[in-house]
Image (cartoon, rainbow, N blue to C red; front, top):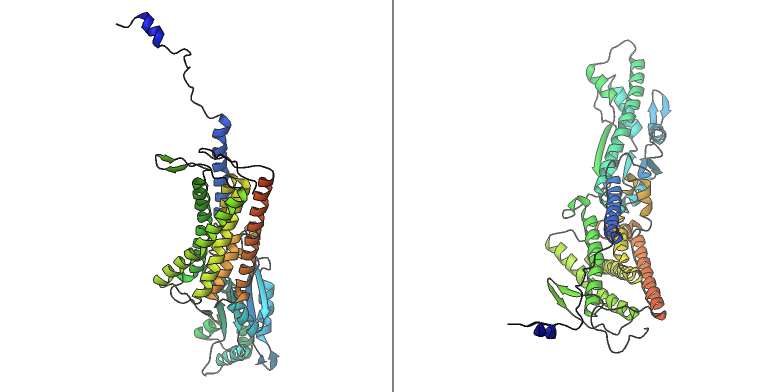
Length: 446
């Protein structure tokens, strides 16, 4: 039996009060909720804003107009219907939506080959002559060849862009057909006098022009109807962005700056005596070693899936550069801004990048404020380069020159940002604190 004396003897000299569990203050609950709400609003604005109605947002949509018509004599007078149609199209096409380029055939083909225009309307050299023959055939019997205007789409510049080009051309050519038909019917009736026109002749004169729509330099098989360039760009972006996140977490865990957790298990790690600058150098090195491996994996998988790869070596080299630039910049942003760098990278590379990439919807069919972001958004620059390599034989003028230059500029910005931020923090003695046991000797500045 335990006596009171025994109980007093075994009792602790200083009883410990029960530990109170720390609760999160209200502001710590509101911070993640606010961030998620802001991200949701930004995602909704960007992704729904550029897909809702592309034709409504149409602006500066580049189309070439080629007039090769040499003219002819109609009803005893020199006539040049090609000039009349060119003037009518220039006046009728809304200038705020369509950027109509009046070009020669060689320049139009060059711009089609480089993806500078989304299509071309071509009036052939014998257009007026065929119209005159058609008018004469309505009066006297004979064989005729219907006047033709060719509409060339450019599927390599974008699948949706080719569809928009065809829609615009259909609307414009319907108006041209009606105008030429009215003019032609008036001339025929004046020549016939009181003699009535047959029903077939009236129908032929109502729509005298045959609009022939063809694809200029059609896409080969294995291109996903033109979407392969966008999705290849997307995987380069994702592996660079996600790779930077993984490299950052794993390196910090192995150096003892963040907990190394594997499910319910926790691995304590002593903080390494290493500066911020040297830590970033390690992360950059891992990213640089990983980039060519990832680029080679993408290329190998693409070849195994029968993807059209006209310039595989060039695609591998540029893919390596793009992954490296994204990963290096992403790591630098996190080194400079800490946890907030995760949100900054997500917004810059993904949230703002996909809508302004022009990979699915051409920039000229998105709201202007989204199109303006393409001037600096990384994904658009990468898409231009990848599209040029896949669809335009790697021509610098087709976007590879700009994409390559902007990717190198982005890599330089990432290197400068990371070096400047980490050196500044190290010089000011703002060392990182680890989660595990501290080393016996503090880390040096750098």
